[in-house]
Amino acid sequence: MDKLFKLSAGLAAFGILLASYLFYSYLAPTPPGWCDISTAVNCDAVTKGPLAEFLGVPVSLVGLIGYITILYASLMKFKKLHLFMVSFGMIFCLRLTYLEIFRENVFCPVCGACQLMMLILFIISLKLNRRHDPILARQ
Image (cartoon, rainbow, N blue to C red; front, side, top):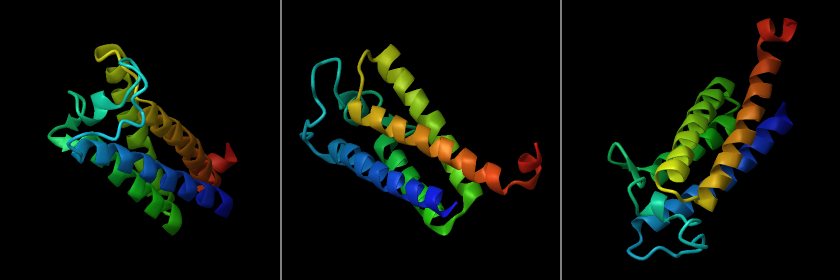
C-alpha cells in the first residue's frame, strides 16, 4: 500500500509540473511554445484559445489545484479524497480532450500527458480503495 501511495505522490508531482507549465503559458503574454509542434498539435487551445477557461476559471489552474490535492491525499494517505479527486480529474481531462480533438481539431501533448497521469492515478486509486474496503475484499 505504501508503495502505491509513493507512486501516486510521484505521479502527482509530475502532474504539478505539467499543469504549472500550462498555467504559466496561460498567464504569459507570449507562451513559451515548447509543445507547439504544428497547427494541429499544440497547447494554444488550452492555454490561450476558447478552451482556456471553464466557468471563468483557467483550466490549467483547475488541473494544478487538482494535482496538488492528489499529492496531499497521497502523502496523507487519504484514500477516499484521492479517489474523488482522481475521478474528477479523469472526467475533467476526458471532457477537455474530447473538446480539443472534436471541437477545436487540435491535440495538446501536455494535456495528453496529464490525461495519461490521471488514468494511471485512477487505476492506483482503485487498487488502494479495493484493498482497504472489507466489502470489496470479500468479493
